[in-house]
Image (cartoon, rainbow, N blue to C red; front, side, top):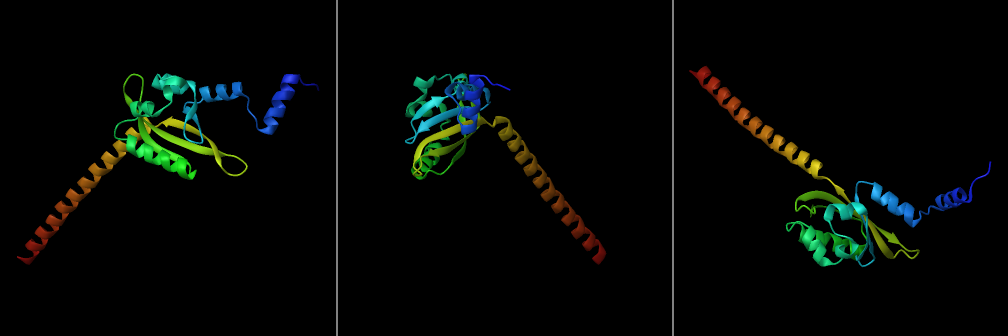
Length: 175
């Protein structure tokens, strides 16, 4: 059975673990995450279409510290800077939950994660990252925590009621 040169080329690329720029862009735009790449210093060199759709920023507008100050919730900025700075300094994987501002001005919770790409010597040459929308999970977690707190309070009050009843019965037994 014969294959076309395009199929041979695709098979060869796949066998080598290589994805061409068009394939990468297609893949990055199809997944639900916001995808980004930085150089080894943390300077962003790529954002996928979902990033642009969510933030309203194109690549040119998405670079630089002002963009992060505009997008990150004020309560998350310092922590996000510290966590990212640690990863850049150490090469440790990056993982953080923070709120991003959408182009409509609302904030949503995201899980930001990135791993370093290293050269043969082990030096970081780039970071590949994603931001996964976890708004619904955060809301569910908050609801579960509230329900747990409510249940815990009810158990405490019921325990106190039972202790009072036991004490009252003991008092009746003594008389």
